[in-house]
Image 1 (tube, rainbow, N blue to C red):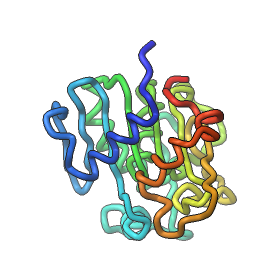
Image 2: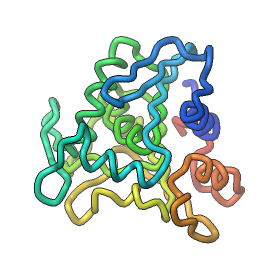
Image 3: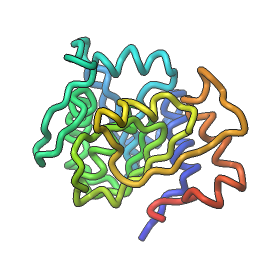
Image 4: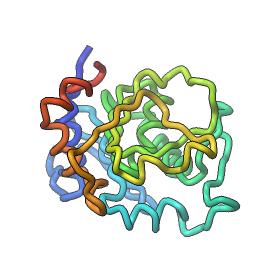
Length: 212
């Protein structure tokens, strides 16, 4: 089975934020702020928000509608699983785009990582999600979860939201990156993830390619 190097996946996210995917793009969408790029090699790239401040502005009020109660609306998906409402709404747009393309790999970051978890599990597609928020509020493991890997920094606030005490969890496996020292305000950026992924101590415990 083909594998996608984790560093190559991170580089695709970096290039997406820099508008530097260029002629690698086969087709793309930008619908209500939801961006996704399907590359000629069959990889689906889903950027999100590279700045921590942007994440909170956008993800707690997806589509400009404030969430109810504790700020994390929960809605059922087609499978019956319970999802963070904003993340599911984003993922449904990406899924509609992706399902006919049948990507070979899915890569996401931040809000894009939330979508990547949901879409990757739904399509049973190898998926690498960086800076992943918790998306699911169902305890039961879904059939496609084994295809998804989440890579999070321990000091990235986004990776701890929504709070676990509210019952939310990541879809798929989860690996934590621990920096030598915290970098407040910068820890969410994909470039900071890439710096940690270069370290030997990280490569010894985190998959360097996916599926592992």
